[in-house]
Length: 166
Image 1 (cartoon, helix red, strand yellow):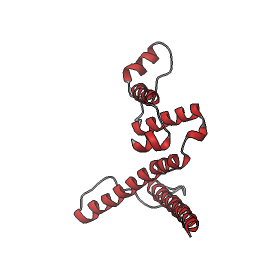
Image 2 (image 1 turned 135 degrees about the vertical axis):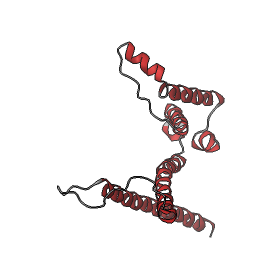
Image 3 (image 1 turned 90 degrees about the vertical axis):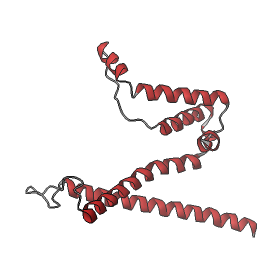
Image 4 (image 1 turned 30 degrees about the vertical axis):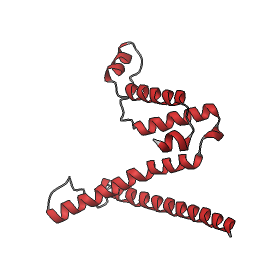
């Protein structure tokens, strides 16, 4: 709350009210099957019922207020760290669940799903297991590159601060 409400953009109480109202409306619109059904009955396209993260809605609303006030008011560094969390969190959760399911299957002998043959099909196309394997490898490489970038940026920042004081 502190990061979004004060560090990302300084919010007045009125702006915070707009953020909360926007969050409520967006969550209602994208989770209301009755509203989607009403749209279809009156001849409009159905609203897609999708899982919506309330945190992402709040950050989007704060960014909208920042755009209204002027882009320079948005703390891009904080926005970048929030976005990196949105990228690394699902990747980390996926990897952790993969590792845990691997141990559950191999240590305890519990079948945790359907096994897929890791071979290439007759037509030479990749099967699902290989696609998943390569996707995980690509995500790991991208995450590793991004983490190295973050570490180097932090080191550069620390080095420049140290040079100021010496």
